[in-house]
Amino acid sequence: MSSIYGSDDRPPGDLTARARIRDAALAQFAEHGVKGATIKGIADAAGVSTGLVQHHFGSKEALRKACDEAVIEVFRRRLTRSLTEGEITNPDFMTALYETSAPLVRYLARGTVDGSPAAAYVFDQLASGAEEFLTGTWPERFPPGSQQATDGASVMAAMHGGTIVLHDHLARRMGVDPLEREHSTRLAMAMFEIYTSMGEFARSEVGTQIHDAVTKYGEGTASHEEERDHDNPNA
Image (cartoon, rainbow, N blue to C red; front, side, top):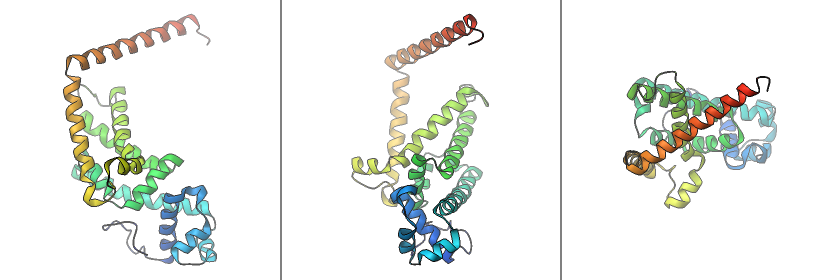
């Protein structure tokens, strides 16, 4: 079977029967979920016996863990390169992330819903990169270590990561599969247009009114909580 890694991200020497089984499991988990995938289905996809799968991994849970570790390693190296080279702040970064390999992205999408450690790792790395970008670009608005920086980076990572989780719906609405290399730039361009338009809206009279209203509501909520805590110190 062909590599699920795409490009050159497969770990050196990772062409063993064990690796082929893990790759088949990764694709099966992405399609059916961990609960829906079976040892037999994984064995059939890898072209080996169920006995060989059990010999190498013992259980489906051990296979899931191996898949998580492999995905984390691939994205760790890609994200590390991106941070080192400054690419993580490039609007095309999500396009590059998509181009890593469709099976890996689909595994992450499924894992995000199922609570996979690999998905949590990638999200945290995206949020860390976003926070570095926000604090470095607008330090007065997003002071390093501030709640504003943490909130902004977390929301930014969720907005961008959401395109991975919802890629099937994106494909349905866009009429193309955004996981395919020839179409992946459409995501970056759409994000550019949205950010540009929302920036203009935020500076408009209506945008300013909405910002002020939300700020006022937040201040009122915080004041109410302080009064409640003062009236009920043992609550």
